[in-house]
Image (tube, rainbow, N blue to C red; front, side, top):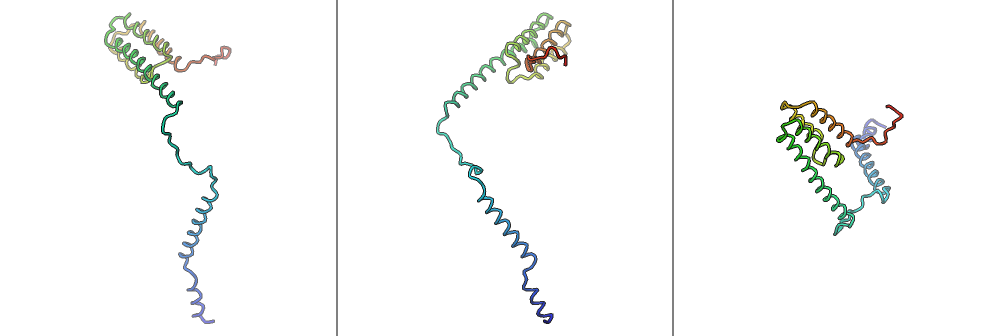
Length: 166
């Protein structure tokens, strides 16, 4: 065998690039085929079903949601009225303390703050009133009681273990 014959045999082999391309293409085709064939029927996404009319449960849920929103709007108005009185109308110690007491009573009545009013907003309104200068000790006590009551309403620990001080 001459060197020419040996050279012809080598050139008949596919190039490295062609070999790798063939192997990769075959592997991808195999993986795709087996993945779609072996996927169980429940793993495939079902086609979405659309209802022509809402169900009774959905209608009831919507009615309850609307009722809740209306109640929350009424409560929010009561809170905003109390905040407005405290901010603009109250000038004496008894008026300021009375407004804080009325806010505390609303918090107890509603079990916290209504949707749309955050504790930080309430504190900001009251502290703005405090920053104006006139803030007697009795008003500060009532303000602290308000903050404690709100904390309790937002996280009531009614199952407190009395025997365990921790």
